[in-house]
Length: 272
Image 1: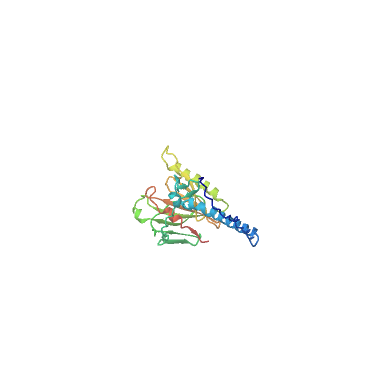
Image 2 (image 1 turned 135 degrees about the horizontal axis):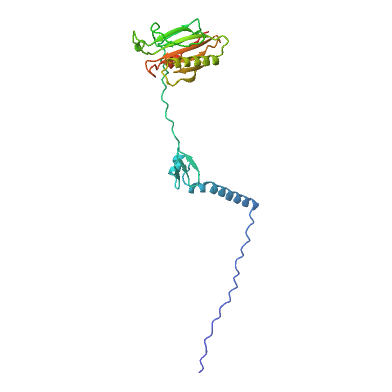
């Protein structure tokens, strides 16, 4: 008997499943250009911030003075006074130098404050002296045009009574000018004093006289130093009134001993 195959059961057909339909995205409300504008502004602000702050983050400490320069890496100091510090980028800073506090200046003391003042009313002048003696001695002076002796002063501590020993002293003579100019009178005095020297000097003794110009009370003065045999220094200057030439003779106990003479001469004043 033939074997019969078992019947295959029938499977019911399923309907085809279609994929779900995706609805299209809804359009964005509002214009898109506004979003792009905002994004651009944000990027621009971010770029500016980076440009400003990023160099400061990597540039190191700020160098604004000499001390900062010394502390900065790569700086060098040039030997000079004051010293100069040069940064790695070439900026230069000079070392500050503090000025010393000036010492208080004591008021000037007038060394002639307690000196005696001599005044000549007749010839219109005055001067100060350290209380020298007015009755001690005689001192030669100008020799031309009949000079008048006004006063003689001596440092009594340098005199030797009863002798002709040299001493520290001065005398003042006044000469009427007349028609003679100051320069003419000086030349006349030079000739007369040199002649005195030639008469009194030893044979062959050279004449060592010299002329020194200076100022006395604003007036040009001429000193004839060692022009005569007596070794007296004679200083001539013209009175501003144009009437007189004044001559001040200086004698010394030894060369350079009468140290106050120039200071006495600096106190001369004209009163007429």
